[in-house]
Length: 156
Image (cartoon, rainbow, N blue to C red; front, side):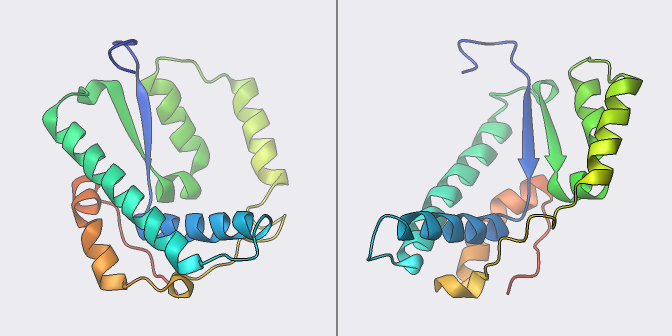
């Protein structure tokens, strides 16, 4: 992508990868259940965990290498976004040199006031449902979490 679009600017979001792995495993499990009588949630979780660990290692490698200049990318913490979404949106607009108009801010405020994360029910899952070893998985993503200072969430 950068070869084709050398002036591209990127937004990279960050969250505890074990939390996202469990969520992905749950989602893929539910999708497969709709089309198959034989679904192994543990195998799905292991597969996604392997793919995600490889991807996170590659992200760290690329960022350390300088292949993507730091002024071309903004890192956005999931936690900071959830705590103050409009502040993070403003930071993204600023990064891209865009004006976040007062009218747009009002619309975003109104949307956030009218919509809660829980209004449509929750996506319920537990890390422990997938047969993964928490310590081993945490070690697999340690380099990513350390490089981007991503905190570990409490996993059930």
